[in-house]
Image 1: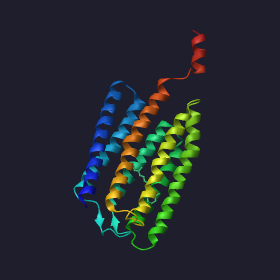
Image 2 (image 1 turned 120 degrees about the horizontal axis):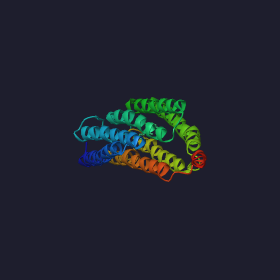
Image 3 (image 1 turned 90 degrees about the vertical axis):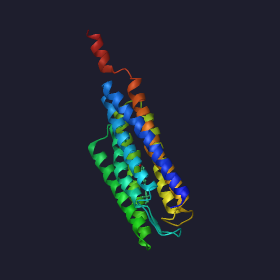
Image 4 (image 1 turned 180 degrees about the vertical axis):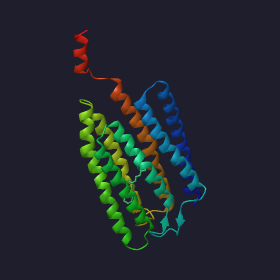
Length: 244
Ligand code: RET
């Protein structure tokens, strides 16, 4: 591991720690205010960040990677797959909780996501050309994740929050843009074609992880405030008012 790669891992650990602290405090204050929905989101984002903090500390300490040099397909940062398999389902919980998704949408998302990380790990671990078969399988599973978010997830969220659907367009948009960059970085990195080196790979994945965990967590909390803050007048409530 180069000193620059290690520096990026420290940046990751620090960023995740700040995120964990912020979301952890948020969970406490939401509990005090008896704001159950906010507490759920803060709890999930807290755990996402605290898990990542510990794993970035492990990476910075030199654990979790098998370094075969700079050539294409020679480096395996297997600990990343441990962090991803733990954090991505929690991120999906954040989204589907916010969007009041159907259970079948949640299970399909969780299943496709796990398949994506499992085949992605096989792609990283493989040293012959089967690497690219696994990579394509992983991309297929990711396409299912995108389909479920853009289709059923958005539809259900918009039905649950009439007139406020644009908040979910923004949320899904941010999510899809950041997640799509992962396979692009992977194929260009030493895990794939080796178009750039391990330091660049470490920096790009660290930035993407900070965006998808801390950045997305902040966006999710802001979306909840927007959805519950400026409440639209509920016709049913009006009926009740009249009858008083
Ligand atoms: C891999 C390589 C194989 C093809 C695909 C990939 C996608 C990975 C993704 C990871 C997202 C991780 C996140 C972590 C944040 O905590 C495994 C790189 C499709 C989308 C969001």
